[in-house]
Amino acid sequence: MPTDNRNLLDVLKFELEFLEQGGYGRLPRESWRPRFVFEDSPTCMNFNSKDREPCSECLLMQFVPEDARKEQTPCLHIPLSLSGETLENLYRTGTQLEIETALGDWLRTTIRRLEAEKAKQPVAVSSPR
Image 1 (tube, rainbow, N blue to C red):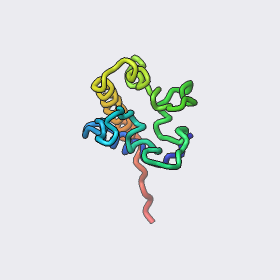
Image 2: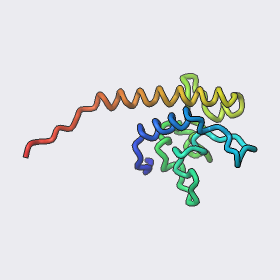
Image 3: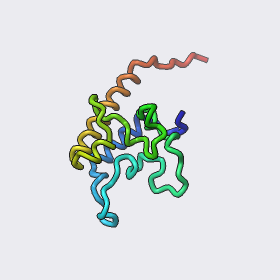
Image 4: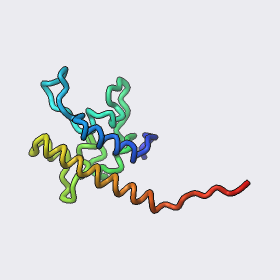
């Protein structure tokens, strides 16, 4: 089970904001290569880190299908659509716009679902002392 202690909903909201603010545009100092979703985002536990944490510790692992959890970059295998489209597929066949659109749609859907689940949870009531 992941040991990433960040709040999942906060992480996903941050990722959506990062995406919407153009975070996956090319960087001037690295204009020769595309930016990779999740890996090149502060969402990734290993973003700008010298000490690489295993991906198995990441919050996003709960979205990775069981059979893809041992892959080198498991987050590439998160199904972003009902048809099962993943970043791995989109990197081979999609444009940057298609990748970002699929990611944004997935993030918005997932955030709404998690917020709805959270709203249904009973509120803890403090007992008077």
